[in-house]
Length: 199
Image (tube, rainbow, N blue to C red):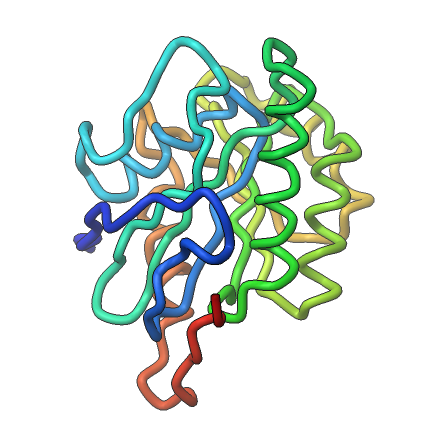
């Protein structure tokens, strides 16, 4: 299944977000969890989203048009320490405004490193999704680095989340096709049109 995905625009505030009818999927996760790598894998394009060895490079909301009526919004990674308090606060406010107020938002794709336990930030994102009745998709990234015993331990660590977990790897391609198909279930021609969030 081919994913037709193209960069559209960047925004630094809710008011700067595109005014379009597309249904949006927020791509969120800690810095260095592999958001850009996963997005490139989903699109089968190495250069769609910039990857970097230095975490915390993404500072804006990056919009990618997906198919005919969807969009993926790559949010800045959280938990990156080498950033001024003022910068971190500005980015946090922008992200929360988008996640809590953006009318176009229909789903949150939450990435968690398979080797890590969910922390307060992940739990808060899950609560936002549930509070707004958004579809929540949890993908465990970098699963190529985990053996079967480590994967089983990850499932036990995250059992309390009460959500389905998906193992994914941008390196081996594991879980990528399934994730593509799941994202496209959010596309619905019969659904009422989405009104873009007012500036």
